[in-house]
Image (cartoon, rainbow, N blue to C red; front, side, top):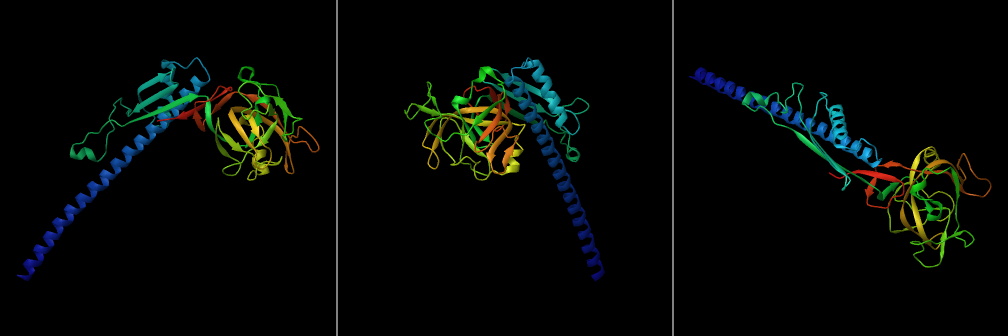
Length: 322
């Protein structure tokens, strides 16, 4: 009887073990299938993001390829490039030129031309798969908010306007707020009504290191002194030479030094060729002695860090909004 009982126990344990193994294998298989599905969605989303940004850039630059046919082909290229198997289905590309937006809608595409994502393990229980999709929406326009990577702010007097870009190379000098250096305030400038607008450039307080997130039509604190804002280091500032940097434009200034504030009216794109800010901050110095200056030229281009909705100052911003 004891032997019979032991045999029955062993049989029950064997059945339980078999069932447990089947359940565990099923769970592992389901986990693998779900993970593969998420990877498929992630690849499609990466392709949709890249395609939407690329199409938005074509439109922002006013290229002839800003049309449904070329946009569809561009979405296909980026969709395929971001798929691990090299295939993605372009379900739709919605190009809205009036709203300055483009929506790229991608879906699963197999090497056999099917549009179902086919699981490996779930087919055992009769699940043949589903279509995985992803959408991305990009918008282009003129910047109203930006991350600036150099907290240098230029006067409205120094910016010639978007219609003459790119400009010849020039040297812009630091201003100290004295009345000997103002420009004649033009329409839309001089919010404080003193009749003056300082020329040249100054420095802004930063949020972190040498960077700040700025919004136009607002007042921002000045950083006193002619040297770069505390947090900027010589090697970092030197790395910006030969690069285009977005700079805020001020159309009024109240006070100088500590407690001074600038009113930002927009942003310009400036190609830096050299500077002399004193101390270790000297690269291709365009001035000498006690002078503080920066050289370069205003240009056009595209940036990706911020929001649209501002005035046209010759360059555009592209942002993912969905």
